[in-house]
Amino acid sequence: MTDLSIRREHAGEGSDVADSGISATSVPEANTDESTNASQGRLYYFLVPAALLLAWGVTDVVRTSEFSFFPTLRGVTICIIDWIFNVSGGKFFYSGMWLTDLLHSLARVFGGLVLGSGLAILLGLGVLWLPASEKLIDPIVQLLRPIPKTAFLPFAILLFGLGNGPALFMTVYGVFLIVYVQVIMSIKLVPADLRRASRMLGASQRQVLTSVVLPYALPGICSGIRIGASYAWLILILAEMLAVREGFGYTLWNAYEFMRMDVVVAAMIMIGIFGFLTDKLILVVMKRQFVWAEEIAQANV
Amino acid sequence: MKIHMTVTFEQVSKVYSPHGSSVRTIALDNVSLTLEEGQLVVLLGPSGCGKTTLLKLLGGFERPTAGRVLVNGELVRQPGPDRGTIFQAPTLFPWLSTLDNVLYGPRVRGMQDKATIERAQEVLRTVGLADFQNHLPHNLSGGMQQRVAIARVLINDPAIILADEPFAALDEYTRRAMQELFLHAVSDRLRTLLFVTHSIEEAVFLADRIVIMTPRPGKISRCIDVKISRPRARSHREFLDAMGEIFEIVSQDFSAAVAEAP
Image (cartoon, rainbow over all chains, first blue to last red; front, side, top):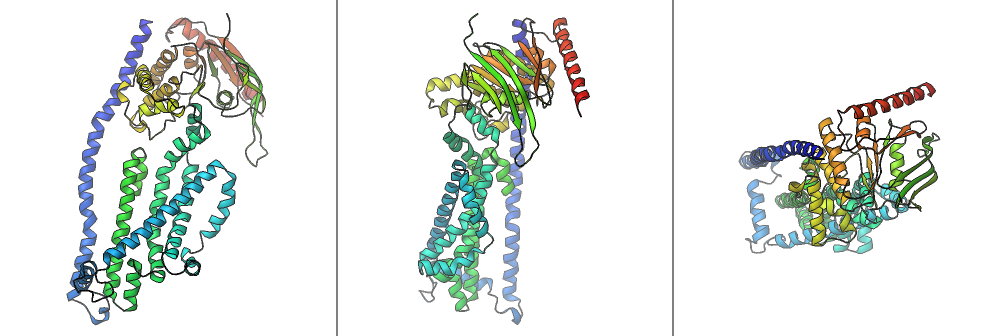
């Protein structure tokens, strides 16, 4: 008996030393590596946009008449300042409207994102609950997917009238199609043995869904929501051009009709910045929640 | 001796026919086997002999095509915490810490009081992972992950434990240490154990009884009781003789199987 326990302890010690060695030495090393990489990466991050801005600034001064339609950096900057702070005292349709436009666009994007993703996740989990339901939903989804989502805008306006209705419908519809496909795929990637392990440990069928399938699929679902978010911005701008009287898309289209290309570019820049920030926000949440799926999150950075 | 708990395979057959294919694979052909309480039975054989299928049937993960699998006279219908399974891969929940992985079983059954948490910590001590409670699985080595897999089964205190080549992916030294740890960890009470392996050494080291199986179709070729006293020393004459004896049987079965093959 003593013989056995002594040998076991030795064996245990051997492997533990090797294991703790890994976590004690190589993890801090990886951290320092990462932090230098990160600060270097952050520098690179700003390099190209800064260079482009500089080049644009140069063309303000040096330009040929053929490019006179293209707004100057100075002009666009003045535009943005007036858009935000109303320095002109309400001279233009956009003066001082920036915050209103921003809040309306954000509300539509996030409203569409939450409703569209929520619906996709519910129906996706429904497929697990009732496998036959996939056969009911799948053909419609696969048929609708290749049809340009923007093609539904005229019908949305006829159906919901001008206003928030068609804008919301378009974002919900676009986000749903994208996220639903990703939800189904992520759920199918859950290893069968992981579900078996859960059942064997005493989980009910419903508990397998909530405590194993959903958490395992969540990083994949969030990747879908990321793609959905960028799509929500895209389709929202289009909907805002036609259906509403505030928002970045409305400002962009209205400016074009007045041939104010400087305002068009200002609106484009804002859409770019807030689309980018939406994506970053989702990434930050993902990185915090899915440390275990780090490789997935990193592959997406 | 009065037998309290038995596991019976009654003329069990399992046929796999892949979806949309007419090819049928007979994984098990009319197999009968009884496991007695407190026995550690090792299923030994080459791949394709149906040993894992037998384990899946008892685990309730699959249903037999013909025959019955009974625990205490009751038909096995689905997986349950009374039959803890250790899979070939650790199959831990990757988003849960070591401690939370062990607590998974109690939690899904509505137990997460202080006593349960203390019990989980005690089980982790038994498998030598007391200092790794808060580690996520991907920060543990393969051997340590498999120890968590043992611990999460032990906390449910199952009367039956199934193990499907749990140490096959580990290196020789870790594997031997794990076999000893496994024997120690499951020895706290009377349990019926079914352990699948293709390693003769592992079989002789662990088993009260070795069931040798042959493939195509999966059948039991012979049952051998291992009477070597415990703890077993792998270098002892007795141990090596037992290995030699089983090696002879397995080689005969294998050459017979090769000769019969079309």
